Length: 343
Image (cartoon, rainbow, N blue to C red; front, side, top):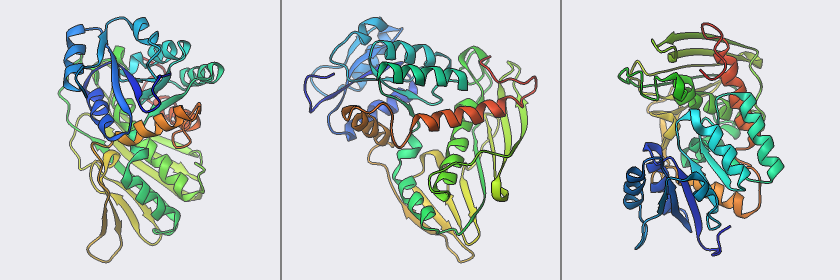
């Protein structure tokens, strides 16, 4: 643990695109500092450290994972590698006694998720999936509205997360060796917000689907270029969504109720506003902006939990990660050929 209680020192594993968002969010969290960067490419790691220097000296860069994990000053590591490598880095960090915040999906099978969570508990080390959506101000606002019955009884959910990505078999989106595919990469948000809405409307509980309908469009590499899913829940509640790398969409999420609809109107996974929609016009819109870039919420949550000696976040608990993995496995089991493991 860090020797200065006012400073929380982060190590970053994988200084790629999403890690820039993480480093940018640190500035909004009291005490948070980028301290060490592990990169396979030293030049890339150094450029990242220089870009996000917060003082006179940039973060230390190493190409030796063991070096980072042996650094006693590091309070936690943030893992932002391709999905295919999450498991190995999580395991190494837990075995070294380092608290972990890992990008979503935590891993790509329920079985591996169960193994790693069991390891975290065995070692007494904090582990959290970095699903930043759950910590956004707009979701705090929307959660209160749903719990207070603003939409009446929940009837259905509809959402999309699609963007056009040029086909490149070596890119992580399309490469099975890097755990490519739209469901793991972006459909996880449709599932996560489905679960979140159900929890707000059911006193924190998330019912399991009674049945799942799946249609899949596969890329030449065999990964899912697009997936269309309808989930059927008790009480005739449904959640329909499409995720894909083959189309453009406004990417909204709507919860349809007996009295009104609640909508995250654009890019729902990172929304800064929520709308209550009735037959009256216009919709009631509530703005809820980020402090910096939206990642500050999950960073603050992880730091608070780690400093309190917790092994999991009450707001993104292990059970939630396992629930997401269970649903993802169930959907993938309905892909052509029954794909439900790592490619």
